[in-house]
Image 1 (cartoon, rainbow, N blue to C red):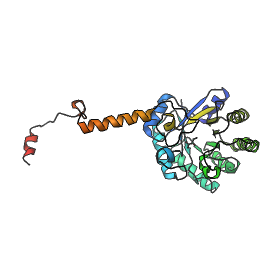
Image 2 (spheres, rainbow, N blue to C red):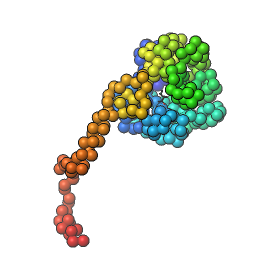
Image 3 (spheres, rainbow, N blue to C red):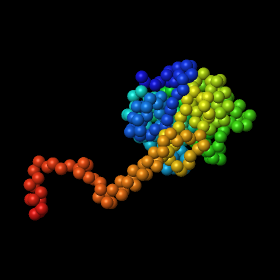
Amino acid sequence: MKNTTATFQKMKEKHEKISMLTCYDYSTAKLMEAAGINGILVGDSLGNVMQGYEDTLPVTMEESIIYGRSVARATHDTMVVMDMPFMSYQVSVEQALTNAGRLMKEAHGNAVKLEGGAAVCPQIKAMTSVGIPVMAHLGMTPQSVNAFGGNKVQGKTADAAKRMLDDAYKIQEAGAFAVVLECVPAPLAALITEKLTIPTIGIGAGNETDGQILVYQDMLGMFSDYVPKFVKKFANLGCEMTDAFTQYDREVKSTAFPDKDHEFHKMSNPEVLDELKDL
Ligand code: KIV
């Protein structure tokens, strides 16, 4: 059964947790779908984990569409949310609508995600009014890393906590179907989750949000440039991959690979080899 915005809403109402992961490629998206993950975010974290940038700011619309399409092609039941790159929606409502439309039409997303609260409510209203579901994102919003002065937990002070709750109400009112809460103190995330009627998806926001999301390379132990405190490694594929690459390197150099089981023997006309020797 396809996971839709209605599925997410029902899951919140029934107190069933929503699982989301980021993904950027066909093969991995197929594995996530097979595992029953409810939603995939083609996050602009692709700038970090796929492209090696220090932050998400350089990611372009064209890149998001290419990565997004690969994920959409692999999925049937999983909801695919396309992240809107930095400066693809902030300039104007018209620009936001055009780019959200491209992510739906060209990348075949089921929804888009943008960062921010009250400031992006006109964009959320415009998108939802033409049938584009919008996931919002509050707390440590990575596109504002320069304004925050680093990857810092948000909502710690009374004022900041009030502002976040107010933003959460506003994006809900504007029509967002869900909101990501990133690096938010667990008690504040729990309170926002209780107050909102739409689902909250936490990342570094404790256990009481309606769902969770992690960057897949982080949770598989494949990315070590920067590992935030909230990341749990569910596997250590980084080590396994390095071991496999090392063994491959060794076997290629020793000629142990390829062995007879991994080569083709049969030729319809093997005598031709004798002829070829003389050429
Ligand atoms: O881009 C991303 O991966 C995200 C998640 C961290 C929520 O926005």
